[in-house]
Length: 194
View 1 (cartoon, rainbow, N blue to C red):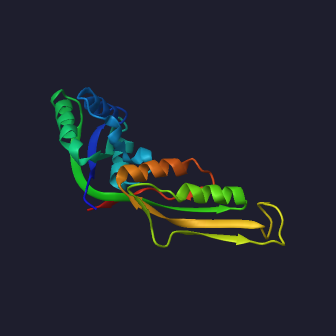
View 2 (cartoon, rainbow, N blue to C red):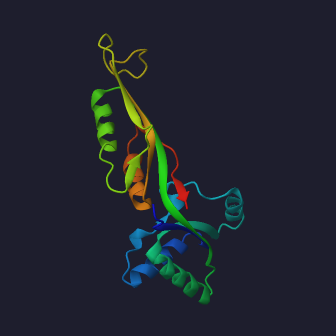
């Protein structure tokens, strides 16, 4: 997969750097919704030294932004303009990505829940793929009755697990959709570097 997004590491005000860059892009007629704040979306990408530095200097933060390749020059321009005006903002690193991924698992004890969860994962859409080991195992025990959570045997049980991978914006949209489902356990999003 050709790198279409990059992880752009920026230091700046804890609450204003991302908003500033979004406004900068929008002011130039570009879509600010194409950049994402990685940690806000569910990526665990900040190393321990950055977390400690952010705790000791709470007014400044290290941001990990996910930026499409065509917007990187504009983001650089925005950071440079902020720095020229005396704002404490700096570009630290740009790391090309091939995509992103996350793992999920679920257990459902009722047929409607099991079918609903399977339907959520069936049509993943363009730019997404399930890993080969992804799947759902359905067990039906006619002698058991009901969907009681603490029963030793359930009439219906669906267990699913797998990994979704693909293009950064598509993976983020899928993760957002699945995050709303209380029966699905999601692992943190992971970046796939070049």
